[in-house]
Image 1 (cartoon, rainbow, N blue to C red):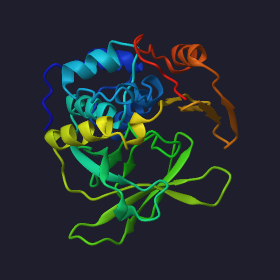
Image 2 (image 1 turned 135 degrees about the vertical axis):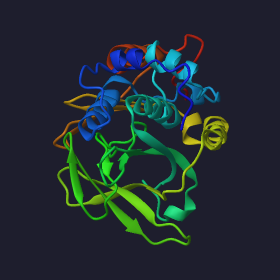
Image 3 (image 1 turned 120 degrees about the horizontal axis):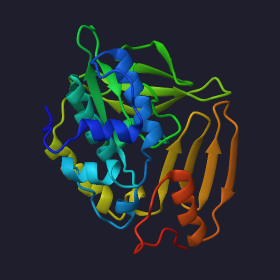
Image 4 (image 1 turned 30 degrees about the vertical axis):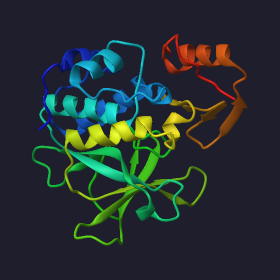
Length: 277
């Protein structure tokens, strides 16, 4: 169990706008999951400055709950895990290999944090993840069940088993591409539990390694009921539920800061440069 000291459930739920039940059931799990995603943006501004963001509860509360900031997977899912535990769920931290864009899953290290949430009285745990910064991310948790399609908040997902060398089953989360008949792998994981010290090391590596994609360019996303907004370097991409995409280039630093403020709900540190090159 994660240390819940310095975590304020009331403040967290106010931040994400959740006014529903505070029960350890599937409906609450799905609702809080979606509310978190729509309220708290994904962003890598600390890693862009080669600084590993703190995963301590007080620092996560200060940054994601009490400030106009977001975070990346370790921050989001660590915070969400504390919220789930405060609501009465049992949570296991998982480490996943990002399959998106990979020819060989085994070539990718385990750098993504996901969660397994147990709902009292239900036979299967749920895969929950509020920190995967991609258009194929889960909007609602899905039961840990292979070869079954799940539709949640307008996105379609399924879990499948994939072969690998090891004693534990390898699960692969797939997302359905809107307007196509393709299932795209997002990330693969086993059910081996990981602990906070494991992610302290992974977090430092991803945030400071000059070869990490998160240290190269700004990467931010904001989700609403009508669009997924992504800033990837200078490219601003808006994707709608029907798969329609519009793109344009952000022309300069002033425009980038205005976008972060008005569209992503983020106040960027004054001392940093968002766009380079």
